[in-house]
Amino acid sequence: MGAHHPEQPARLSAIQDQLIASGLDSVLTRFEAPLATDEQLARVHPQDYVRAIRDIAPSAGTVHLDPDTAMNPHSLQAALRAAGAAVLAVDLVMQDKVKSAFCAVRPPGHHACRARPMGFCIFNNVAVAARHALHAHGLERVAIIDFDVHHGNGTEDIFEGDDHVLMASIFQHPFYPYSGTDNPAPNMVNVPLAAGAGGKELRSAVTSAWLPALEDFRPELVVFSAGFDAHTEDDMAMLRFTDADYAWVTEQVKAVADRHAKGRMVSMLEGGYALGALGRSAVQHIKVLGGLN
Ligand SMILES: [Zn+2]
Image 1 (cartoon, rainbow, N blue to C red):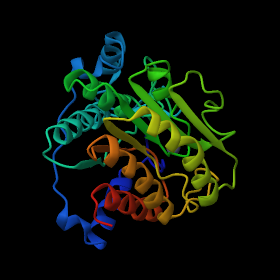
Image 2: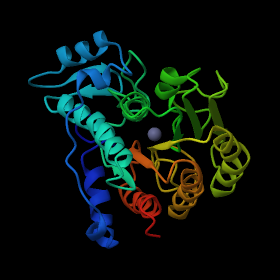
Image 3: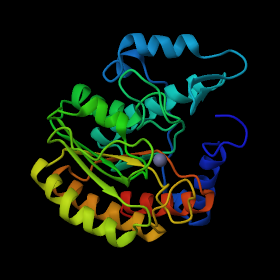
Image 4: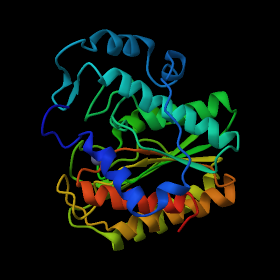
């Protein structure tokens, strides 16, 4: 996104550093993310949109897709690999080769709408994961859990009214992108939180809104939009989650996945800009995903 931008490569090394420091690194299996194909992207984005992104990708310098979202000569590859990671993770989990998967990817995806890049996002990675599970693996019901501090307006744009997907989200409001307060369709469970809210409000929202909806829905796969920017140390926003809150919320969702989805979970990195908090919180989340807590 440019020099000194919070959506920076150091985010992924911060996660890697904490995986090593926590000892988790030695028990994880790593996979290289493949490039998503146009066919996989076209389940989410119109072909014209994918073509336009390919065409605008610069061979030198930087182009801005919107005021927040830029591409340099490496961005197209990164965006295709982020979406490709979603596909590979779903394949691995569905083929029972791994129990669950975390995708440490950039750029993030949950603000990318059907035909519009936005908020550092180019392709909607969780949407690519969900549609791949539905179309390539024949699932009927996929739940998307979004605990990023920003509302996943792109994911909502793609799935509102789609009975095969339930989206449960929590986010600061009023705040960028200023959407999500109305549930536009029964498959959207949005819980806006006021600035200053923390673990207590998270617990109340998950227990009273998310879990009953998830139990009714009986997902066959759970996909996380895992953003860690609601952390109290993250000055991108004003929620006050702690490292332990990320373990707790993952445990609640894992219990649903264990009951209905054979424990299948795929998690895609979204936001999280305070590097220390990002690394520690991601480790808490990954520990629970892998049943290693
Ligand atoms: Zn965010």
